Length: 120
Image 1 (cartoon, helix red, strand yellow):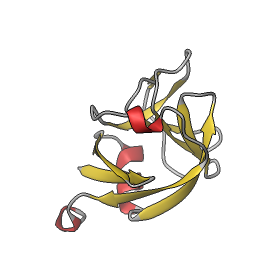
Image 2 (cartoon, rainbow, N blue to C red):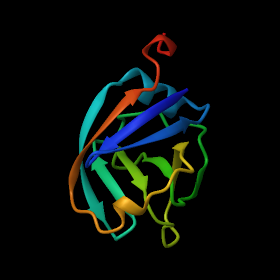
Image 3 (cartoon, rainbow, N blue to C red):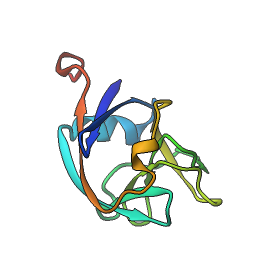
């Protein structure tokens, strides 16, 4: 499953992982989230605990290009730089250039399925 992430006039393609949180996120699309710029390396929306299922998904270090879920707060996060030891459940990744996010502020981010026909 692939999705598009659009913000500030830029669009990225993200490939979702094969796990319960990624599949649940896919089912919520299209979705626009108000995301905060946190710590100088991630955009984050605190949606509330239980937003996505996280059982059985290992937490791993977050790297630039990762779309992640932090289950304790129900946060959906996109990392535009490598984190400083932050571990979350990875639900997707992009290898596209992220330079346009380097000096960003809080912003709305829209996630849509790449092909609506894939969403079934």
